[in-house]
Length: 162
Image 1: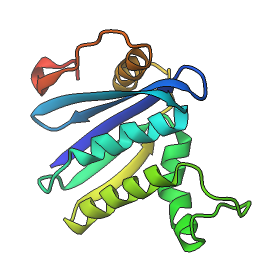
Image 2 (image 1 turned 90 degrees about the vertical axis):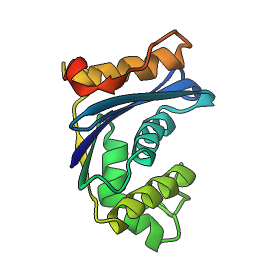
Image 3 (image 1 turned 135 degrees about the vertical axis):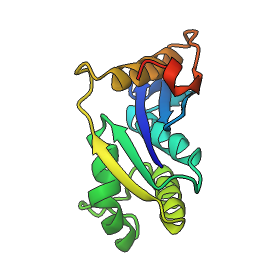
Image 4 (image 1 turned 90 degrees about the horizontal axis):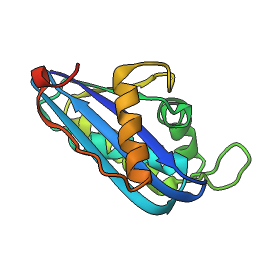
């Protein structure tokens, strides 16, 4: 079974109050998730959206595609992370990698899924370009950052807008 995870993060100020969102799309079900922190950065919220989405995925998946509008998250997981690990979590400037705790957690979740035979793909989607799921996950993240009321959907895929 293929599962899509759409993720986004938002912060009002950098640092400032922030929110993250994830939308998990299975063949039968849609699950919207979201969370908030009082003092955070946009990058941490982008990473949190991906992390909490991946944590929901079990062995039933055969393929997971994580769709993010953050090049930081996509490139971090597909291009940079192995080098950071080899260099003891140092970046190209020899300084410690920012957000190491979240990178380690993302890698742990990806490795858990791969161990179970799940193929994990990371896909960049341009933000604010009219892609419905990207727009919805942005609404979740920004609403939570702003402490606005938002109803998160969990239910049948056929009743969702995809």
